[in-house]
Amino acid sequence: MAQIRVEALEKSFGNFRAVKGADFTVEDGQFLCLLGPSGCGKTTTLRMIAGLELPTAGIIRLGGEDVTMNRASARDIAFVFQLFALYPHLNVRRNIGFPLKCEGIGAAERERRVMEAARILRISHLLDRSVSGLAGGDRQRVALGRAIVRKPKCFLMDEPLGALDTEMREEMIGELRALHDRLGATTVYVTHDQLEAMAMADVIAVMNHGSVEQVASPRDIYDRPASLFVADFIGSPPMNLLPFRGSLEAGGRTIRLGERDVAIPAAREAQADSDLVLGVRPEHVRFADRGMVRGEIYGVEYLGTTQIVTVTTPYGALKARSPASISFRTGENIGLDFRPDTLSIFDQESGRAIRTALHDGGAHG
Image (cartoon, rainbow, N blue to C red; front, side, top):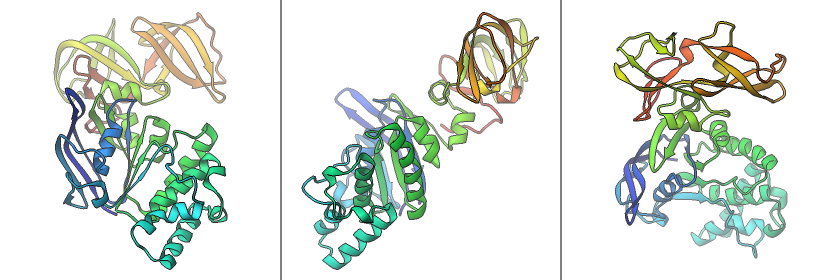
């Protein structure tokens, strides 16, 4: 396996910039997810790493070697597509072994590698079956087998679970991560599903409108979003974002929200009187009779052990996660409080985080 390094990567199609200065590193043996909404540039970025698209500018290094202009066949990577891309006239054994046959690997070695891949993926009993009669999860395992049988430097996966139903997708999430750990594979995985990314990735690169907004661990992405987009995109429900106008001094420990001073950890930079946004996760909202924000309960969403309570406030709708054992009435007036060390503050115009929750300096972008 090998490190992947992407430096100032750009891709334009005519006047449209699909990828804008992407920078990130996937360490040897690491699992990185490119996460973002449809059209954000994540698949284009993956295709450039694979050699299926040539960049307009920037550098791609694989194992320290500059492969920016190399064709896909010269990069020693394995690509797993969303729609399996299997040969329907070949059985499972011949599908998995096909890349080795193309490389001129002898029949005995080819069979040994096919059997090893099938054992890892637990599909040895399917080797003589036609792929056209397999369930979606088994077909995806065959596609993975065809990738790992070559023992490439890295694996690139473009939404490989997107065609599966919910139950099978949840099962395959665990299997893919377990496969990664067994192989020690360097993996870049594209998805628009934050649950897939949070469950599998060592590192997540969040993309929006062609730019990489933040590269960090799943915990840092969730707890310390580097931008308003990341705060709003990650989480279910996402972070509450309360706009206000105010100032911050470097080292300042309070902000003015309406008629109340709200305690925050020390701001890491000064901010003149401007439009700001206070961010707080639903699980960090507390109900208090003398809370710093008051509002009216609009609705309650029961989720089994917890419930999501939506409260209308002067700053917009705010969601709180609460134990299901607590009773709430629609229309009830209620106070809300926030723990200071869980708050994030953003500049509304740039979308950039001024300070992030839990501790300063945790976000990367």
